[in-house]
Structure formats: structure tokens, C-alpha cells
Length: 251
Ligand SMILES: NC(=O)c1ccc[n+]([C@@H]2O[C@H](COP(=O)([O-])OP(=O)(O)OC[C@H]3O[C@@H](n4cnc5c(N)ncnc54)[C@H](O)[C@@H]3O)[C@@H](O)[C@H]2O)c1
Image (cartoon, rainbow, N blue to C red; front, side, top):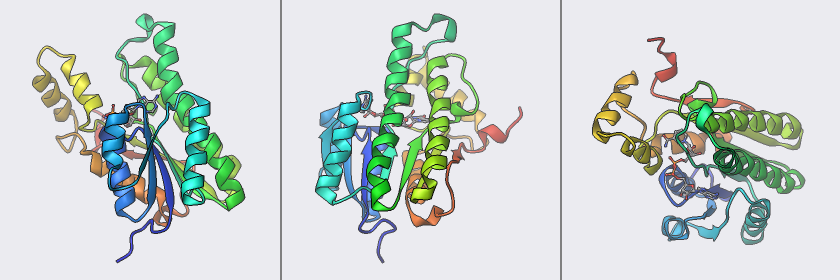
């Protein structure tokens, strides 16, 4: 059986850990040629060993993102799938957030996605199309009071997603976002570690979910495969919520 992405080329940002690592594996497993980037070169290279190519790129720097996409085009002859996954998190409520913290979060989580979309459409357009998948969060739709800058950035990711879909749909480019709830990755583990009793905080968070657990990275990566592939051929400009039922619950 051939993969859903056989013969396609893909770029994934933030492959050094967590969800990005799993997305790179799933895309490659579906037959795509994958170029991954990260600022954590050790983790990034480890992920891509045997499944694709790795290149250092800081997504908050536009020249890095432009060079990343040019590299993919040179290696693979084009770009069919762009996954803007890299992000950071800083726990701070709005009133205490410094300008420096805000700039850091917006630089990676918002500008990084903007640059990824911008340079992907520049190469996808003349080639006749492609699929862009932006990793947002349920925090693009609802809030966590101690993640003010993160919420601002993720809300913006949906704005970029819609603007890209609307403007470049006529060029055959689809752009969608995934909005996951908590995923079992180092980013969330670091959040649990901020508590005096990390295991108790984890259990408390899991109890909030109707499915009584948080997501495994593969469960989100499979949705990215769906959005990257022709299986979602008439879907564009939309957030796909993967939250174990969390937002459906009014209590
Ligand atoms: N883990 C969750 O619960 C959760 C929930 C919703 C959404 N998300 C989103 O999923 C995505 C992946 O998160 P994760 O949980 O795997 O986090 P993670 O911290 O495990 O991995 C993020 C990766 O991005 C890389 N990165 C950070 N800054 C970068 C930069 N400037 N340039 C390139 N790479 C950079 C990191 O080095 C790391 O390898 C993020 O967009 C995050 O906001 C995560």
C-alpha cells in the first residue's frame, strides 16, 4: 500500500522534540520527503536520522525561514506541505508579562508562523499549490489566565491561517490549523514541573478532560497528516480542534 503523501515534499519546524518529532515521523511514514528544522540541533538531527533531512533554523528570524524553504526546494524540487509547529511557552499572567517576554513569544509563535506561511506560498504558488498546516492550540479559542502572551500568539495563528487560505486558495493552496488540548510532550511536562506536586497537577488536568487523559503526540500528528493530504481536499482556513471533548464541556 502506498502512503498518503507518496512523492510529496514537506518542511516541519520544531522537530527536535514533542509534537514536531512525531509529525516528521508520521509524514515520512506516509511517504513524504521531509526537511525538519529546530534550534535544538541535537534533538532535531536525532529526529530526522533515517527518515529525512535536518537543518538549523530559528523560525523567529525571517532569513532562516526563507533559507529553510529554499533548501527544501533545492533538495526535493518543490514544496507540497509546510507544517509550522515550533513554539515556546512562558507562564505569566498579563499584568506581569514583560515586553521582552511578549516579544519572545510573539517572535517564535506568531512571527515564526507568519514567515513560514509567507515563504511557503511564495514557492507553492508558481508550482500550482500545496497544503500549509499551522499548529495553534485550544488557547487560540479559549484562555488560560497565566499564558496571556501565548494565547495572544495562538489567536493570531488562526488569523494568519485564514488570511493565507483566503488570499491563496485561488492558487491551489490550502491552509488550516490544528488546535490541540494538552499533549504529552516536554512542553507540558515543564508546565507540570512548575507545581509543587507535578503528578497531582497532571492528574488534576487529566480529570478536566471528558476522555480523562491528555493527548499522545501521535494522535495530533495523524490529524496533521489528514490536513496535509488530499483526504482534506475541500478544507481550508479552518481550525481543527483535538481536545478530548474539553471545550464541549460547560462544567
Ligand atoms: N504540548 C501541548 O500540550 C500543546 C498543546 C497545544 C498546542 N501545542 C503546540 O504544539 C506545538 C509543539 O509543541 P510541543 O509540545 O511539541 O513543544 P516542545 O517544547 O516539546 O517542542 C517544541 C520544539 O520547537 C523548538 N523551537 C523552539 N523555538 C524555536 C525556534 N525559534 N525555531 C525553531 N524551533 C524552535 C524547540 O527546540 C522544540 O524542539 C507548539 O506549536 C505548541 O504551541 C502544544
